[in-house]
Length: 109
Image 1 (spheres, rainbow, N blue to C red):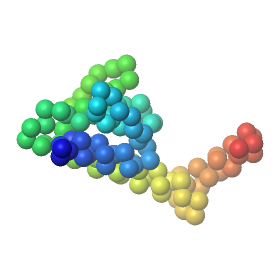
Image 2: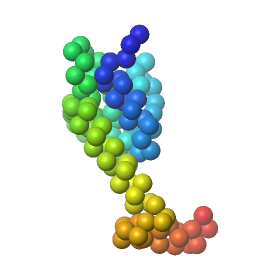
Image 3: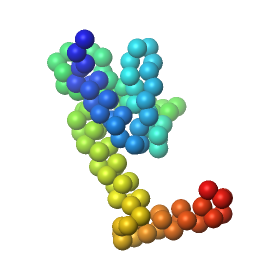
Image 4: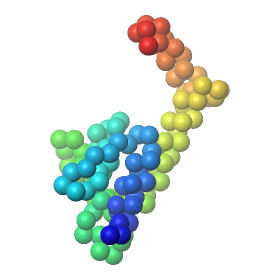
């Protein structure tokens, strides 16, 4: 069976490091590990528009345009990569590395 656009977008999200997957009721879902938001495909996606449902922990559900959400998450992933690069000279990367080194020493990591 061919996957809908929504399902393909969820699969793409799962390739980003800020997401983890699980299966519920036969549907593949993505969990945003920084916020706890559960991302699921819109199953009535007959015209293949690629809408997603975001379920916020203990809160509301929102339907979003999957292509835009995917682009935002790709940008977030790229920002994390840049900020965690040990060779980067950006202020955020420098501070991130300093904090990590402090935690390594303090918590024997």
